[in-house]
Length: 348
Image (cartoon, rainbow, N blue to C red):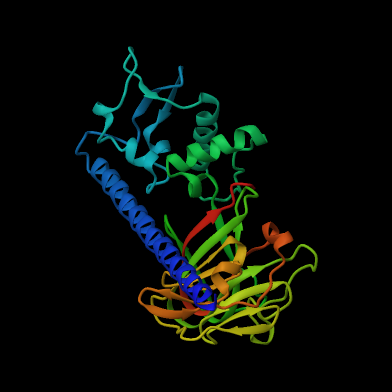
């Protein structure tokens, strides 16, 4: 009986290992696909700007959106350069796009939803210095999911629902924050904590990824300030995870840090180029694509076989799951890092 149980346990462990390895490979392929798509879109726009197809940002395009006609400047559609929308209207594909009997480019979308997206882009185009906080379109629960699907289809999620990152430290230290199309690049000469927050909307970030570039120290994770008020990170070299209502991953200490308690993970190192991803409001953690910590019971009850070597999955840390959607991302660091990606909770 015990032999059968042992064999069944080994089979279950092997199945879990293969499943996690499959998930890891899928995430890597999905990320690579996004990178290639972004490169293709950027190339399409660059070619259009070079005039290879006689396309000009000042072109007025006539569209038929779900049976309703509208006119829009090409530059408005190109406002988010890495998006599929910008690629589609770069000018390279004008001749091959579907058109109605009058020659208008046909868009098979709800006019009501598409117009909301275009009007938001028009407002952003008019705000040359980004001085105003432009509100993202609002919908009722029935239309919200349809709009999310449409903007995601066009690669416009981060364009319509932008984020901002800001220094929450009161110290007068030198900090540089740059924003490219796809990421935030931050350099801080001293220990400091940074919030990642919505700009003009209230969608919650569910997962995000950070790459350490030239960091002397970095902790990334989540803070829940709904019940306790503001968490004073940064004092006495404290970072996310070191205080109550915070959880973080600290590469320097090779640990998950939750409410000030350390939970050791063997083998983690802080190196240039190390990527850290936290999913589901801090319930799963990856370092360089490998799962290193999880609150999911099937992933945290044993050592798992990942990428040909055994990696211990940290367990035993708790997080207030009933308040997860009130948590938001925090990065505490000295040095240089970039926020490479973030993903929203579609329920918000």
